[in-house]
Length: 451
Image (cartoon, rainbow, N blue to C red):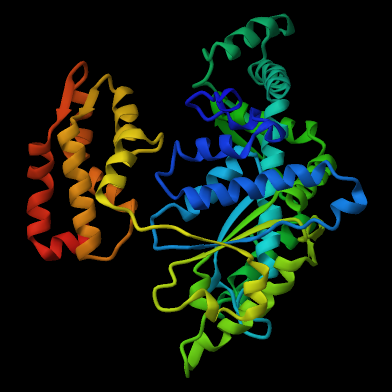
């Protein structure tokens, strides 16, 4: 799989989505998610169709809209992880939202258009970070130059010392010296009216953002250490070097053509029969989602955005409701349905042994920084998987997340003492796992709160 020969630092940005086949996408996802082949295949096809669409003439391209997905399955089986990993793979703007956080138009709270506004904010922030990274070397050189001049001025040194000062700044020899620089202080904007009304926090945030753009922070003199001063100046110069108009243009294009929105808990928008109270707006939220998913234009602080070609992935456990109980129009907007299976003990073993984001692997990497070699025996992994499956069966089923709670408890003492274990090799055996977890399981109250 040459196109996905990525290093372990996840240099995903370099992957050319046009070169990826659906099979390669599934193989990539399998590095992080065990099983769920049907869901992986469906989303791989959705991504490939995006590539196919972009190769069409413009008049035909407008006719081909994404086939949005509905993922059905309990928590912790990979619904969010599949969506997030895909977004990282193709370097696409991604946002996960919970459907229950929104209210229908006319109710106090967040309306569904804010989903797109938040997605745009994410895209602009990511594009700005990339642009700043591209100019980081130039920004650092300029910051060192400016700081050297200011250092000489404030210390009353001769100008011919500037080269020597620059060398010392680059080597970090002056990091603890202090210097006075101009620091931008944002205006403190108090917005009281919105914050005292439940559900209106987003309005408060919008007002703050608007007032901040109208009244930019003022500069004030501040004495800081050279190390901090360099960071402040680098950031300020990087902002001066990037083209914000170009950043916004790229971000809006990415949102419209590659954006992915993951809407979780859509099953909770299905009102209980005869229900009253807050749930009565659930059907209204479903209806408000229709134009967003089908295709409309949303006005954001950075410009208008068409949602026609954004990929929407809805998800829910559907324990107490069926997908067929969603309003018919919304069902029609989510034509591809995939069911994700609950995880069994063997799935947990495979997650621990073979996935790149296994909690056991994470601890091996973390403790290696302390020169501690950590090894989990096959029997230990089997015991962890056994406990995870048992706890999910006897308590709330939280899927693969249970592995993390168990491994955290197993590793607590070793992680705490790691600085004193340098150079050692530690084997985690099934007996050690049992010593740490068995007492917690026997105490039902502890198991409920800790595991």
